[in-house]
Length: 425
Image (cartoon, rainbow, N blue to C red):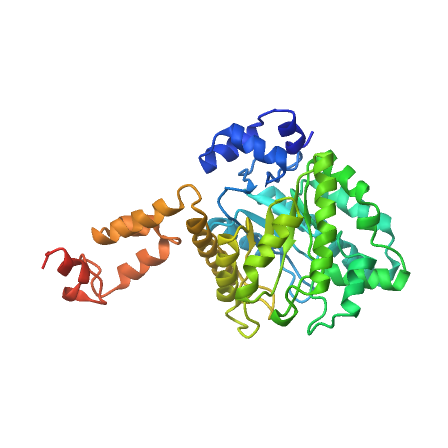
């Protein structure tokens, strides 16, 4: 049985207990939220010995880091280093998006070495294999896709992005509502191209029960991909995006009836003033399933700084109810991220998640800020390091500062406002 099926039957699993302990909640409350589909616990029955985390209502906002090879840069050992870097700096999950090298071997290595949950986008491997065989993307057979999904499920993948909502109906809205940037989702573009070339319906939608069969068997959490997400701020919240979301709402309901865990992916590039309505619309349509957002990116003009853009959008999204942030690195829109890019992306998203949790009053979030402020008042450097998002960086800067052995920093020196206010001068 899946975590959701067990929860519906009133069974409190060890995974539920682990999530409850991490989040400081009563296990029964977590179990009820899993049963309702408002919390998911991505945990494949074949993936053992990693830190179990819940995603959804009332929990800490979680962070995902994308890693993986590309045809232009394929170094599996480097991807393992990225994996360890992402985990070290606070990622709650990683997604292997490899499209080059021995993809199965790379995925197995990541699963074997990951202490966090692992996600994939199975259609990427299907596309890659077609190209390697000098075939057209339209040569894909529906069975190719389902065989890949089951293969990855057997390997132990905890959650999968599946673009089930890119249908003949949803893509028809693209024709009558012109976009600046069209489709930016690789999976979404592939499914659309395949459907137009073959005249067939998306097999992930048409044979959704087959998807549910596989995911139920291995307890894989479905991450319903936003294949029609906007890739430009001018395209945000358009008809195609909303049309896909309406279909995803129906698919969430079908998954819940089967007891299969499901979350929903969201945009994308979204201006600041549209983030709140996007979150509320998704939650309403999708029965309050956990919401997994990329960014969102709130402007299109900052290549090289998109981790900052994504953190701005992510903080607002988390504050309004987003449950899971996919990190954005400085390499977004430019190239495959380096190890340093991974670190910057994770930390930026971690800051965004915490800002959102502060507003949502997630357990413990405000206490951390209070403790940091108290440490600053006491000029207690060790506690400041302790409560910092990245403890190593402020410690290093303090050690290198001009006043490393003093109880003030080199910014204010003897004119320290805290000391003046407390009468310590």
